Image (cartoon, rainbow, N blue to C red; front, side, top):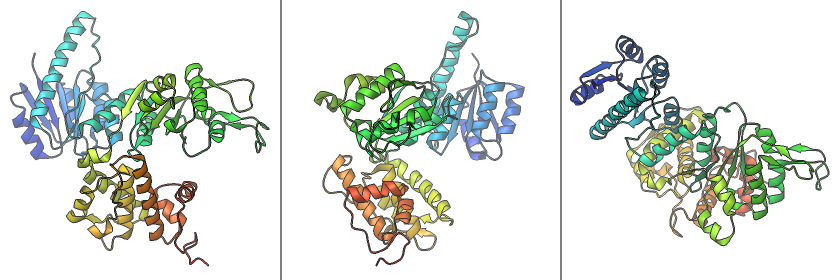
Length: 454
């Protein structure tokens, strides 16, 4: 079986290096410096495999992938990039990429991947002959850096099109809601609402009313009928954050929703139907809670049809530089300024921290550094960290303490200006008020308009 490979990249050095490196892997190795040129090559003679860069002038790798899927469905496509953002990886897998490689490429891993792809092609060819030309599905494989995280992104791309319930596990601040939103965004019902509910932020009676709605007069203050989040979600997604913090009574009601696809608004005599998909998340040890009876076993198995475990940032420190520069750009856009440069010494300070608050803590830290940096440089003194001394990273108590200290420091930097503090922290004003009350914080001497307090 002959082998042909087309390498697409706007960097001439990469084209030359890969042409030489893959000379023994295929009988025909061709190159193209643009996606448009690649389409011309494919039109003349469809290659077995296309290795395409993601970010190129003009047409990018994702758009090329879509066109290749339509024009040359028998060609396997591998996307290459130096970027590791979740939406791009999930989109590439959703659009039919064979795999996703992270630069700088490991040539040994690339060769192993190509061997697997060509073996898969032989398998598909045999299946085509045996089953009237209908090839079996072939799952993607990962070759690259930060393996666990990229596997999550690829899993997101696969499960997005299903209606399966998903359980996302991970410490606070690891980006569980971001993953849930990406699953929703890739689903057939992406145009329907994504409704997020923090199960910790409200009392049980209010949580039930919030999710299921209520009838007028069903409790004090219920002046009129109100639709709940399940009704508002339609065929979209209901994201239940911190599901491990709910009561046994609420868990039994949620179980009914998952089993029967119906719920009772508070005070209602007849149930309502729901077509919403449920994605739940928690930082708690649910297996321990099963043993103590704090969490229902039947609900546990209903929720974790698909389980995604998000690693804490301290276990993937190679992501810190990439994330830091991403957050610098994001904060700079919000502030309407050019992105400052992160010095090596400042980056070393970031790399030396354990990040008990995970990605959320890193974003807050970098955002504050952008706002406090003098000129166009972020120096070590702009990097303000919460040093933990009380427990191991990831413990609930220390995460709460890290959150308390960080909120207090930002409040101090804004002289108690709540609106500015909420903006820097990336949270709503009501959420900030709840944190201030929870941690009994003493506000610095300023009112909410930024002036001196009387």
